[in-house]
Length: 80
Image 1 (tube, rainbow, N blue to C red):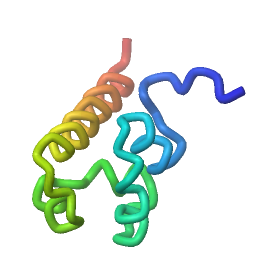
Image 2: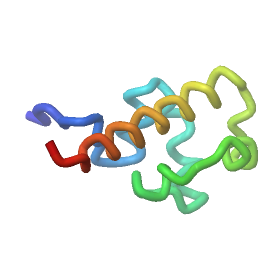
Image 3: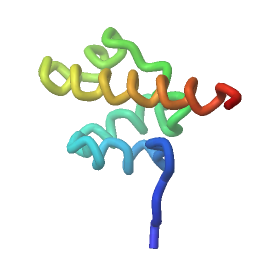
């Protein structure tokens, strides 16, 4: 099985978007070159609008998920 992905690390952009119920945008992200989680991590609110994510609720959901991931990435790198 897929097992635990640990610190919210998704294997693909599609998997991440599905997980936050935003799977409808997978194609748009892919078509615009956001085909890896590294690329997606750089997305700004302006980028989302440009991609056609116009619903504020969706923008917030995507941005807060990215913010959370960044925090986890940073925390993951901090030596214990």
